[in-house]
Image (cartoon, rainbow, N blue to C red):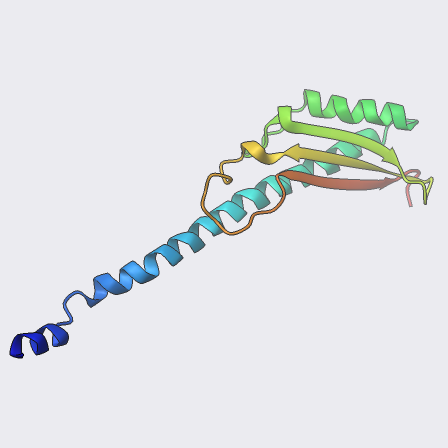
Length: 140
């Protein structure tokens, strides 16, 4: 009976048990933060590409010419963003039916090649990142 009491009072392995309980949760939270950081970096890059393509497309006279200018911008630019691959970028230009004095450039990025989808994390956003930029024709 004396040996059982000594075993119960022994606290030498308590830190290891506490670490075994807390470590999986900590690692899960850490991987989730990394995954969302990568995703938000890619989403920011897509938004910047949409804004740059819209600024380029403003020189076009009609929707077809704006579409051509925006696609040429994507094809000829370097897109020096770390998590953005040019071959997965799709750009489209559309006129706004509610306001004929503006048009919208929409950029879609297929994010399936990002390294975050293999991490065991909480629910992540959609694998297609869509961002847009609207430009008024003729200034203010």
